[in-house]
Image (cartoon, rainbow over all chains, first blue to last red; front, side, top):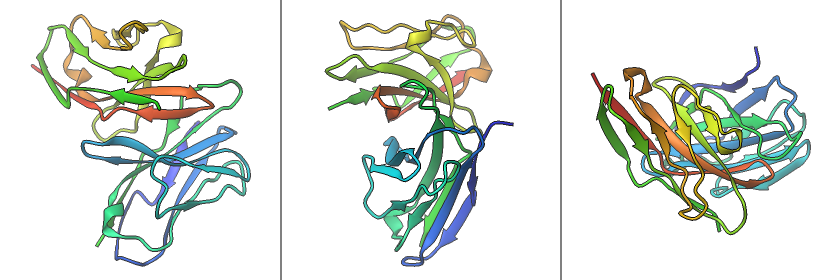
Length: 114
Length: 108
């Protein structure tokens, strides 16, 4: 089954403790991205990647890192999480075969930073 | 800069009534526009895109370049349409800019 898989689905942690949210897709998509979803703000893009070893900042990159060493994986790293990063996070992927392809979303990861 | 505006955070309609979810955008070029839907406890998924000009689950959306709008419409709302709806704009290169979303509730 074609899908985008995020782990963990839920995480409660404390300020300053480094964490990584993994994202993997099995559709051989070139494009991957991370969003955070907050009430009243909709989805905002954090980082995106057009292909392996190519990453760019989205609208709200502060406090986050990403890497794209393999085509299928696009982990989101919070080196020193803070309470304002408490949010629902979505990973998405799409094909670059031609532009503006629909994105496929993961189930989401709910992070709570205390 | 691109911007997507969904003026209604919440919208309630009765079952069988028409529904229209508003979306306005600002972008200097020719964007591609999408509607995504998120049902309760499910992932965000594509509902329709303007370039396809198709009807999905009874929903249609027409791009009005003069009014810079891409409103989502359905003539007869069903209970299973209750969900969060996001309008999104893509200026190109796969990037998506989302509106703040409208939560639709269809009252039985």
